Image (cartoon, rainbow, N blue to C red; front, side):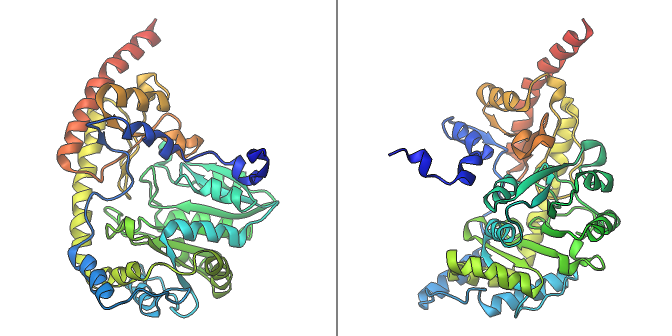
Length: 397
C-alpha cells in the first residue's frame, strides 16, 4: 500500500511547523539559553491552580456545554467589556475553545472554502497559512515592514485584494514582530475592509501585553463588530498556556456555525481548565499586572542590548518578542539561528518561518528571566560583532 496516496492533498501541501523543526535541534543541545519559546516563563498563579484542584476534589470531571460554561462566558464578556470596551452577549456571541489555536482553525473552516483567498498579514503566527490551506482556501501574504514599525499599511492591503478575497487574518499586538495597530491605523484598514466587503479574523491573544498605550481592537471601530471574529485566550496574559483555554467572539450566526465544527470535533474545552480560567478572570489581575511589568523591563533590556550590539531592532510595543534585523551579519536568518545555536548555545527562531516578510530577522522571546536575557545578549554580541566587521570589510572591497 502506498501510504502517501492515501493522505489528503491539503495535508500533503502544508509544511511541518518551522518552529517545531528548529526546536528539534534545540532539544538535542544541552545547556541552551532559549529565546525561542513563545510562552510565559511564569507559573500559573497558585490560586488559579488551586481552584482547578478544588473542582476536581468536588468531582467536576464532566463535559460542559459545547459553548463552554455559561458562568465562564459571562465572566469573559464582563472582562472584555471592562478591559477593552468590547460588548458581547454570553448567550450567543461567544464560545470557549481549546486555546486560541482551535478558534483560529474553526474560524477559517467556518468562513473559507475552495476558491476563496484569505489575506494573511505577515510576519505572523505560523498556523494561519496552513489552517487556511486546510480549509481549502488560498493564503495570500500581506507583508508588513520594519520601516512602518510592522503596522499593516492601507495601500499594501488594498494591493493584495482580488474578487476572490474573502477574509483577512491579522494579529496585533503581533507575534513575532511586537508591532501594534492604534485606533487611527485601524480606522483606515476598516474603511478598506468595508469597501471590499471582507470578514476579519482578529487574533488579539496578546492584547493585555500592550506597552505605553491601551490596546485598540478593530471590533470597536464603527461598522466592524459584525465583520469581525475576535479571538483571544488566557495563555499569554495569565500564564496559562498548558490549560488551553481560548475563546471566539462574533456575530451570533458566525458563532453558531463555528459551534457546529467545535461540537463535532472537540465537543468542549476541558472543565478543569474552564474552572481555572474563571478564577483567573475574577481574581488574577494583580498577578497579571506584575507579569506585564516584568515583561516591560525585559523588553527595554533586550532592545537596548540588540541596538548596542549593532543589530537594528524596532521597539516592540506589544507581545513579548523582539525582532532584530540580522542582515548586517551577512547571514540568512536560518543560517544565523543554526550557527548561533551551535557556537553560543543561544536559541532564537529564524524570522522567515513566520512568512517571507520575516526573512532577514530573528524572533527573540523575552518571556525569560532578566539574567538569562543578559547572558544571551553577551553571547550574541560575541558571535555577531566579528560577523558585522567581516561583512563590512567584504562590502568595502
